[in-house]
Amino acid sequence: MSSSSKITALDLPMVNPLPKDTQKYFDICRDKLGMVPNVLQAYAFDIAKLDAFTGMYNELMLAGSGLSKLDREMIAVTVSSINKCFYCLTAHGAAVRKLSGDPQLGEMIAMNYKVAPLSIKQRAMLQFAEKITKGSADIQEADRQSLRDVGFSDRDIWDIANVTGFFNMTNRVSSAVDMRPNDEYHAQNR
Image (cartoon, rainbow, N blue to C red; front, side, top):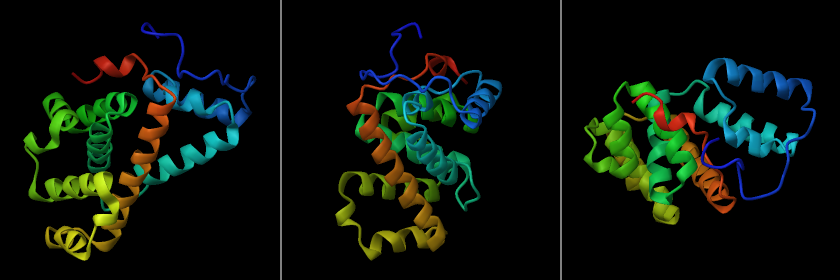
């Protein structure tokens, strides 16, 4: 990393050597992404926590869903924008750019999703994510119904809520420990 050699402000070194399965996972990341995301390296001081994090992430962001991968990444960026999470805005902003093929869309969502050229369905999804992030106790049946009205199923609503909740958690952890994104993310898909 050119901006700093530390991944977080904490002194929690990775387990060394990494367990065989973890090393294999990191090798796959290097092959597919050209790097091991710093968030994985940050969690690698405790393999059980790393496994829990990656298990939840993979289930929410990569497993089958009525939401596209782009939808889920747009939620991640919207939530991270509201929470001002440097790590997640950088990493998931790069994912939005890649999945959409539109660098401007990634920047618009990072700055203010309301200025982005979104479908009615996408806009409703991000409005719901925003409301959960700013005041989840204020969600009412009318909010869920507004998602149904634009074509989301109850399972989709569950997925929107879970992706939103996950990124609210990870944003807070990332900000609290000053987690730094990999430098590679900044230039990707521009």
